[in-house]
Image (cartoon, rainbow, N blue to C red; front, side, top):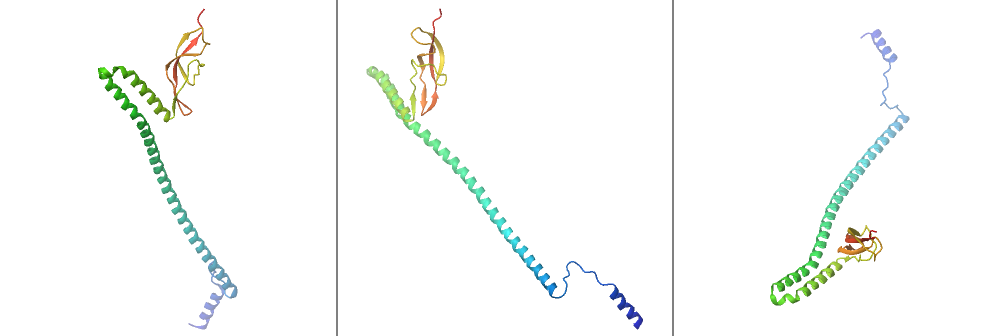
Length: 198
Protein backbone atom coordinates (compact mmCIF):
# COMPACT_ATOMS: atom_id res chain seq x y z
CA UNK A 1 0.00 0.00 0.00
CA UNK A 2 1.47 3.41 -0.97
CA UNK A 3 1.64 6.45 1.25
CA UNK A 4 -1.25 8.26 -0.46
CA UNK A 5 -3.63 5.36 0.16
CA UNK A 6 -2.51 4.97 3.79
CA UNK A 7 -2.91 8.70 4.38
CA UNK A 8 -6.45 8.76 2.98
CA UNK A 9 -7.41 5.76 5.13
CA UNK A 10 -6.09 7.41 8.30
CA UNK A 11 -7.92 10.61 7.41
CA UNK A 12 -11.22 8.77 6.96
CA UNK A 13 -10.76 7.03 10.32
CA UNK A 14 -10.12 10.32 12.05
CA UNK A 15 -13.03 12.12 10.38
CA UNK A 16 -15.68 9.44 11.14
CA UNK A 17 -15.46 8.55 14.84
CA UNK A 18 -17.40 5.50 16.15
CA UNK A 19 -20.82 6.33 17.69
CA UNK A 20 -20.96 5.80 21.44
CA UNK A 21 -23.53 3.32 22.71
CA UNK A 22 -25.48 3.85 25.93
CA UNK A 23 -23.58 1.04 27.65
CA UNK A 24 -20.20 2.55 27.09
CA UNK A 25 -18.62 4.09 30.14
CA UNK A 26 -16.36 7.15 29.82
CA UNK A 27 -12.75 6.35 30.37
CA UNK A 28 -10.89 7.56 33.38
CA UNK A 29 -11.73 8.08 37.01
CA UNK A 30 -15.28 9.37 36.37
CA UNK A 31 -16.08 6.34 34.23
CA UNK A 32 -14.97 3.93 36.92
CA UNK A 33 -17.18 5.73 39.48
CA UNK A 34 -20.18 5.49 37.16
CA UNK A 35 -19.49 1.81 36.54
CA UNK A 36 -19.25 1.20 40.30
CA UNK A 37 -22.58 2.98 40.87
CA UNK A 38 -24.25 0.86 38.18
CA UNK A 39 -22.90 -2.32 39.75
CA UNK A 40 -24.21 -1.23 43.16
CA UNK A 41 -27.65 -0.45 41.69
CA UNK A 42 -27.79 -3.84 39.97
CA UNK A 43 -26.76 -5.57 43.19
CA UNK A 44 -29.39 -3.61 45.15
CA UNK A 45 -32.09 -4.56 42.62
CA UNK A 46 -31.00 -8.19 42.77
CA UNK A 47 -31.22 -8.20 46.59
CA UNK A 48 -34.61 -6.44 46.46
CA UNK A 49 -35.89 -9.04 43.99
CA UNK A 50 -34.66 -11.89 46.20
CA UNK A 51 -36.34 -10.32 49.26
CA UNK A 52 -39.59 -9.82 47.34
CA UNK A 53 -39.52 -13.45 46.17
CA UNK A 54 -38.89 -14.61 49.74
CA UNK A 55 -41.75 -12.47 51.09
CA UNK A 56 -44.09 -13.72 48.36
CA UNK A 57 -43.19 -17.32 49.21
CA UNK A 58 -43.79 -16.68 52.93
CA UNK A 59 -47.15 -15.03 52.22
CA UNK A 60 -48.19 -17.92 49.96
CA UNK A 61 -47.18 -20.40 52.65
CA UNK A 62 -49.15 -18.48 55.31
CA UNK A 63 -52.19 -18.21 53.03
CA UNK A 64 -52.15 -21.96 52.33
CA UNK A 65 -51.89 -22.69 56.07
CA UNK A 66 -54.77 -20.30 56.81
CA UNK A 67 -56.94 -22.00 54.18
CA UNK A 68 -56.12 -25.43 55.64
CA UNK A 69 -56.87 -24.19 59.20
CA UNK A 70 -60.19 -22.70 58.08
CA UNK A 71 -61.16 -25.98 56.40
CA UNK A 72 -60.21 -27.92 59.55
CA UNK A 73 -62.17 -25.45 61.70
CA UNK A 74 -65.29 -25.91 59.54
CA UNK A 75 -65.03 -29.69 59.77
CA UNK A 76 -64.40 -29.56 63.53
CA UNK A 77 -67.36 -27.21 64.05
CA UNK A 78 -69.65 -29.49 62.04
CA UNK A 79 -68.54 -32.50 64.11
CA UNK A 80 -69.08 -30.58 67.37
CA UNK A 81 -72.58 -29.48 66.27
CA UNK A 82 -73.48 -33.07 65.41
CA UNK A 83 -72.12 -34.26 68.75
CA UNK A 84 -74.07 -31.60 70.68
CA UNK A 85 -77.23 -32.52 68.80
CA UNK A 86 -76.71 -36.21 69.59
CA UNK A 87 -76.09 -35.43 73.26
CA UNK A 88 -79.28 -33.33 73.45
CA UNK A 89 -81.32 -36.08 71.81
CA UNK A 90 -79.78 -38.70 74.10
CA UNK A 91 -80.63 -36.58 77.16
CA UNK A 92 -84.27 -36.28 76.05
CA UNK A 93 -84.55 -40.02 75.36
CA UNK A 94 -83.04 -40.90 78.74
CA UNK A 95 -85.60 -38.67 80.46
CA UNK A 96 -88.52 -40.26 78.58
CA UNK A 97 -87.56 -43.93 78.88
CA UNK A 98 -88.60 -44.27 82.56
CA UNK A 99 -92.00 -42.82 81.63
CA UNK A 100 -92.36 -45.49 78.96
CA UNK A 101 -91.37 -48.15 81.50
CA UNK A 102 -94.12 -47.07 83.89
CA UNK A 103 -96.68 -46.85 81.10
CA UNK A 104 -95.88 -50.45 80.10
CA UNK A 105 -96.23 -51.54 83.74
CA UNK A 106 -99.62 -49.79 83.99
CA UNK A 107 -100.79 -51.54 80.81
CA UNK A 108 -99.61 -54.89 82.19
CA UNK A 109 -101.65 -54.27 85.36
CA UNK A 110 -104.68 -53.25 83.27
CA UNK A 111 -104.68 -56.69 81.64
CA UNK A 112 -104.79 -58.24 85.09
CA UNK A 113 -108.37 -58.23 86.47
CA UNK A 114 -107.11 -57.70 90.00
CA UNK A 115 -104.99 -54.67 89.00
CA UNK A 116 -107.76 -52.58 87.39
CA UNK A 117 -108.44 -50.67 90.61
CA UNK A 118 -104.93 -49.22 90.61
CA UNK A 119 -104.89 -48.35 86.88
CA UNK A 120 -106.00 -44.75 87.37
CA UNK A 121 -103.44 -44.20 90.11
CA UNK A 122 -100.71 -45.67 87.88
CA UNK A 123 -101.61 -43.41 84.94
CA UNK A 124 -101.66 -40.37 87.24
CA UNK A 125 -98.19 -41.34 88.47
CA UNK A 126 -96.98 -41.57 84.85
CA UNK A 127 -98.38 -38.10 84.13
CA UNK A 128 -96.52 -36.65 87.11
CA UNK A 129 -93.33 -38.39 86.05
CA UNK A 130 -93.70 -37.15 82.48
CA UNK A 131 -94.23 -33.55 83.63
CA UNK A 132 -91.23 -33.86 85.92
CA UNK A 133 -89.08 -35.11 83.02
CA UNK A 134 -90.24 -32.20 80.86
CA UNK A 135 -89.49 -29.75 83.66
CA UNK A 136 -85.91 -31.06 83.90
CA UNK A 137 -85.61 -30.35 80.17
CA UNK A 138 -86.82 -26.77 80.74
CA UNK A 139 -90.42 -27.33 79.56
CA UNK A 140 -93.21 -25.93 81.74
CA UNK A 141 -97.00 -25.88 81.18
CA UNK A 142 -98.72 -22.51 80.85
CA UNK A 143 -101.52 -21.37 83.14
CA UNK A 144 -104.14 -19.80 80.87
CA UNK A 145 -107.57 -20.10 82.53
CA UNK A 146 -109.29 -16.79 83.41
CA UNK A 147 -106.51 -14.80 81.73
CA UNK A 148 -106.97 -12.28 78.92
CA UNK A 149 -106.63 -13.81 75.47
CA UNK A 150 -103.07 -13.34 74.12
CA UNK A 151 -102.67 -14.22 70.42
CA UNK A 152 -98.92 -14.60 71.00
CA UNK A 153 -99.48 -17.45 73.50
CA UNK A 154 -103.01 -18.71 72.86
CA UNK A 155 -104.82 -20.15 69.87
CA UNK A 156 -108.58 -19.48 69.96
CA UNK A 157 -110.54 -22.52 68.81
CA UNK A 158 -114.01 -21.27 69.72
CA UNK A 159 -115.96 -18.48 71.40
CA UNK A 160 -118.32 -19.06 74.31
CA UNK A 161 -121.06 -16.66 75.41
CA UNK A 162 -120.56 -15.74 79.04
CA UNK A 163 -122.01 -13.19 81.46
CA UNK A 164 -119.55 -14.12 84.21
CA UNK A 165 -116.36 -13.20 82.30
CA UNK A 166 -115.13 -10.14 80.48
CA UNK A 167 -115.00 -10.51 76.70
CA UNK A 168 -111.79 -12.13 75.34
CA UNK A 169 -111.13 -14.07 78.53
CA UNK A 170 -109.91 -17.66 78.39
CA UNK A 171 -112.74 -19.73 79.86
CA UNK A 172 -111.67 -23.23 78.78
CA UNK A 173 -108.36 -24.92 78.00
CA UNK A 174 -108.78 -27.41 75.14
CA UNK A 175 -105.09 -28.28 74.78
CA UNK A 176 -102.33 -27.28 77.16
CA UNK A 177 -99.64 -24.88 75.99
CA UNK A 178 -95.97 -25.18 76.97
CA UNK A 179 -92.99 -22.86 77.35
CA UNK A 180 -89.39 -23.95 76.80
CA UNK A 181 -87.18 -21.70 78.91
CA UNK A 182 -88.42 -18.25 77.81
CA UNK A 183 -89.63 -19.39 74.40
CA UNK A 184 -93.09 -20.53 73.34
CA UNK A 185 -92.91 -24.24 72.58
CA UNK A 186 -96.60 -24.74 71.79
CA UNK A 187 -99.52 -22.29 72.12
CA UNK A 188 -102.48 -23.27 74.28
CA UNK A 189 -105.70 -24.06 72.39
CA UNK A 190 -108.47 -22.27 74.22
CA UNK A 191 -112.11 -21.21 74.22
CA UNK A 192 -112.60 -17.46 74.60
CA UNK A 193 -115.56 -15.64 76.15
CA UNK A 194 -117.77 -13.21 74.30
CA UNK A 195 -120.76 -11.13 75.34
CA UNK A 196 -124.10 -12.84 75.24
CA UNK A 197 -126.14 -11.71 72.27
CA UNK A 198 -129.06 -9.46 73.20
